[in-house]
Length: 403
Image 1: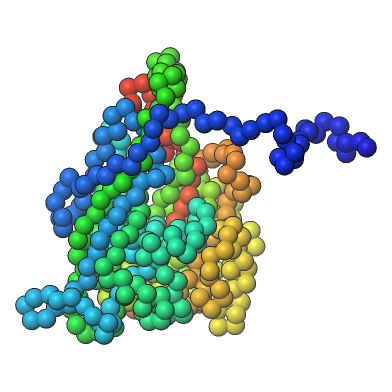
Image 2 (image 1 turned 180 degrees about the vertical axis):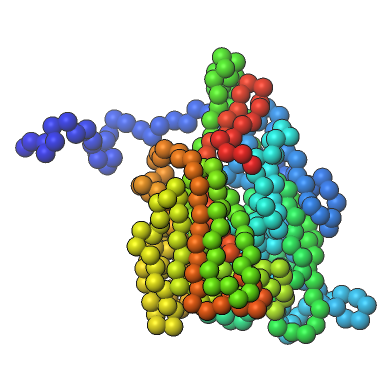
């Protein structure tokens, strides 16, 4: 027998590799989970957490915020607990979407600001399965219950309504909550509000083995730079006024994004209205949309959308292809309330490498067959960039992209 490729590497099946064992992890003396209380009193806003790691290293992928909520109904001059007859619920994925703004800083240096659009960041990541597939239990622990064709009734609405006091988990450092009109959704005439009863941050911290810790410090003292690759997400929104048939806007003027997702929301719902879902992304008569990066148009062959005639197959297929996983968005939900458009600008979809960074201008153009409705529309933009965060021996933080 001969190798098909003489230069290919040889491998023995694990089942008969009798003389090898699993690699040994030589990194940690011990690990523990630490609880941090907010340094600002509840229900004050914004809510601040401060983590002093000391000699330990913090696993940023294991940060969790456990939050307790309560919804109450106004009766006269006081608020009382709701019951099963109240047609009120939190918005979808409220474990993250109740947050209006999120900021993260290291040693006084701001490294992240969600631009008051964290709710849409959290919703779109979960709705479009961006960043990896999550199982049903993980989604439900964050208050995400799949909606039917209606977002203000049905199984998803009822499941969230039943959790009017629940613990939610997500990653946060500083949070500014949304008001009642944005975070709650219902159909009844009565007045409701929600309260943040309690929230605590849990961080997984590791104490390294002395020899490994010394090795890291020696490298830093020799002016080596610690590097952390991460995916930078920038959220933007633009108002499209009543009666318009087209819209054009330059959205970035420095680095070119690798992926862009967009959607259109009624401006009244965006600003907060308890009878409207802020996550109802509808077609709104859009006939074409395109992204232009340094003169290169995506999609190269323009969309010719007509939702009444079911002419949206390419846009739907591009959305599924760009996310790379199952999103639970079927054709009916795409038309009804999950009408997102995806523009994958990468040369190759892979998490194993970073493509060459390009500078230039990124613009977006929309065209409508019918005039923009009375309330106007908000264009929500979710853009991804490859970025890197560096740290030197003085613990000075720098990023490839400005905040």
